[in-house]
Each structure stands twice: as C-alpha cells, then as structure tokens.
Picture 1: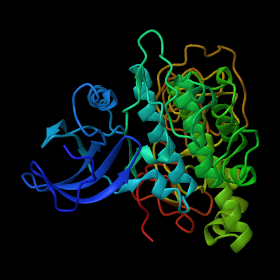
Picture 2: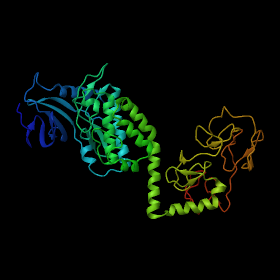
Picture 3: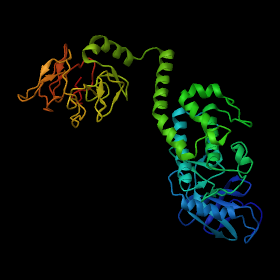
Picture 4: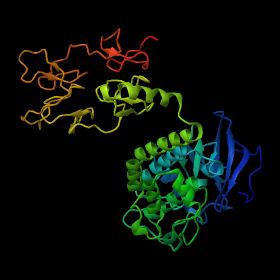
Length: 435
C-alpha cells in the first residue's frame, strides 16, 4: 500500500473518494460515495505504509470499542476492514464538527442541548468502562437537526480493574494529570468542562487553568451561578475535586437544567422589557390582576405563556395549556402529591384532581373564610366547599355546582363562569371560547 494521500475520484473497492475532510497524526478522513448503496460516507484510513505488526493497534481497537458502544450520540461504525491494501473504517457522514460550529455564535438554549448530548455519550462510554482520552470539539460530529455524535475512540482505554497510563490526547483540552501519563474518567470530565466553558464564554482557558478564566464575565451573564459552579467543578485542576465520571456529571447537569432554563426565560423577559417596555400581553395581564387577581387568587403563572393562573384552574385561560401548567408556590399549608396543587391539613382528598386519599390528613377541623358553598352529598361530614372545587375534599363527591364570576358569563361547555373579555379558553374545562 502507498504512503501518500488518496486522490479525488480514486476508487477503494465500492467507495469513490470525493474529498479529504481532515488529516490527524494517525489517519486521514475522507468523504466518499458508496457506489452500491448510493450514499455518502466517511472513510478513516491510517497513515501506516504497511500492515502486520507495525500496523497501529489503535485502529483495530477503535473498531472493537465503537462496536461495543451502541448509543444515539456515539458515532457508529458501518464497516471496518482491508480494502485494496488499506485498513478502512467506514462511518456515517456528518455535516461538520463541533469545532466548526463553535466558531460562530450559539444560542444558550442550543448550547445546553449540545451539552446534554455530549454528556450522555461520554456517560454511556464510562458506564461500559471506556475512557475516551481525546475529548475535543473536532471529535464531536454534527448531523442535521443539531444532533451530535462522539467519534475517534482510537486511543480510548478499556478500564477493567486499572487504567494503564497513556499520556495520549490533544493539547488545549487535555487534563493536567493526563498530560503526565495518568488518564482517568475525571480526565474526560475535565475536557468536557473545557468545551462547555468555551461554548459559553467564547474563549478556551489555557494552562495553568486558573479560575476564573478568560471570558468569565460573559459566562456569568449567560448562565446562573449554579451552572457556573457546575462548570468550575468540571475544570478543577485537582482531579479529586471534579465529578467522578461523566455519569455523575450528567446527573448534576440534569438536576440544575430546569432551573437554568427558567433563569434564561426570566432573563429574556427582563431584557425584552428593558428594551421594548411591557408587551401587550403583560399590559393585559396587569389589567386582569387588578380586577380579578384577588377574587381568583391568581398567584401562579402558566409555564408556557407566563400568564396569571390559579391552582383551582384546570387549564390556562390565556393559551389553553393543561396538565401541569402551573408555575409557582401554593399558599396552602400542604400540597397534593399528584397535581402539586394546594391542600389543607384536614382535607381527606384533593378537590382539584380527584387524587387518592391523603393518609396523613388530620381529624382536627380548620375554618377558612374561603368556604362559600356546601357539598350536595347529605352524608358528607363537613359539606364545606371553596369556589371552583371539582370534588368535595371530605367525601370526594363530584361537585355539580356551576361557579359564577362577577361580570363573567357561563361557559357554553361546562356552565362555569368565564371572562371572554380576557380569556380565550375556559380554565375549568379547557374548552375554546368563542370570540
């Protein structure tokens, strides 16, 4: 086999070379056309001039390791073998690499999505005791719809009981202990942390990796303090202070992700208000709260549209969202474990969702000025109801009463009071209101 690079339109078995994509220390990567299946693929071909004992074992190992790692975010190997004297690894062809993408501006939401995919891929490898040892943007291949897949396990180590010293890796994303020949799971964690830092801050920290690194102010502006702490722990120069592996790093990421996303939404709304003033939605919500906020106890916000809603509602009257659409904290002393709506300590059942009986309900009776109606069940012990309850909290009887609203009109579907002046949906039955 020859030592030179392959040329355009050169044939390797059924594959026709179309262009060279990359050249690394170990191999060249080409885009090629499969003349049998009619699809384009990526071919990875090592530089070694001949096979046999001098052939780099990393590429045989890469085929075995990749075959073991079956995961949506790890690049699969379609085929591996010797074609016309060349050892060839065939894999799906992406549209580029993460290194190509992070050279341009990335929205924070998209960065979080990419982070999740990277962490899931490496966590899967660590779960099978595989250390990548060369985590870098160039080894994450991008596919359509922002899909990311981890490639190049040529220098990965399978950690059975101990991890043999390697020292392999790429300067720039290499953990300090790995540069000294002592790689481990925490080395991959360090490299992942550096990639996340670079995507958010726009700059890559360099040795001696002092904190805070370059671009720290931008990092703090883009994510909350909790996420900054997550990144800092990932790139700590002392391995024992980092996450033990990518699985624990992924678990922490998933724990803080909802609060990070909520922080981003609030930041965007705040910037919008500062730039453009209140939107017409916010003006409308303000008018509604002044007139009906106290009567309906709209202390919550809709998770989707952020409009004012009450825990007695079964759907958002502004956008029609149902299910767990409430975002806020109840003022009741307890909450239903099924729907997270408020409950009183002496209620035996949830009056909002027909949930199971509360085993810890007290027999002591508590008065409440919001009780304004009575249960229709003659055998009910208490018979006290608050407005818009769907079920009696004492006997679980379905409430047939049609609740009215001052200045409102009855819903054509359920008969409960609605405010067509403000609402597009009935909050009690989720039916669409005719304008």
